Length: 321
Image (cartoon, rainbow, N blue to C red; front, side, top):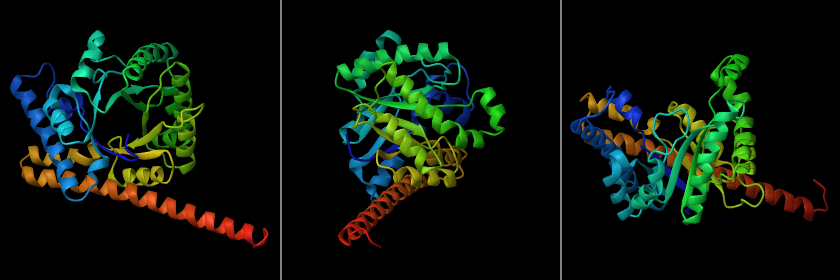
């Protein structure tokens, strides 16, 4: 696995059809082709970013088999890291998209990472959490048994009682979600679910990121890493989350999708900008995330060096300032 992972996710299936195109129900061949064409714009944006200087060795895509099979094959040929989802799209409860045939599909696509998106709140429905954990352990066992990497996208949406307690999602995110994320990691690990990468919602406080890494790496899991996702937030919020995560050892990158490409695709579909302009807008936004994360890592490394130097000086002077 690369030391850094800068992922552009566009594995959205239900939300692409319903929210970007306004379609519901079964899609026609022509409609499916339009979705694929839109995803190709996003992929071309990543390639333009790499051609513009973003590090190829850390670039990755998260794309679905249904609309993006050719894109995944091309990305693999070109040496990009890839991830493909295993969950059924648009479901509140985790189910494997291809049921008993899940292994066959993973082996056919052969991505760098097999990814799942799971909504898991330890304060929620215990029976639901248990059902999901059983399915996830089966997938986890298969992936590690076959030498494949497992990426786990953990969402911890508020339960009604939690939202009522804190009043707003913002306060829930700040005061409750970080601890619930740590608890969710512990519970899933105890159930035998062992991701290589935890793909997690952003956190405002550095100490919360540190606590999450500690949970992900406990009991001999030193090689497990984390990346932060964008959750469709605005640029200011994503910038803040990336800066915070980049300062913590164990966070190696990001997976920011909708904030990177959504506006560009909307403008392109409305014919207010050209395809080339949409590709460049996506590339520019992706490069922005890379620059933010790398600057955050540099600042953290510089702070660590200064601290080490001060401690050495303090020790050499006999413990006197």
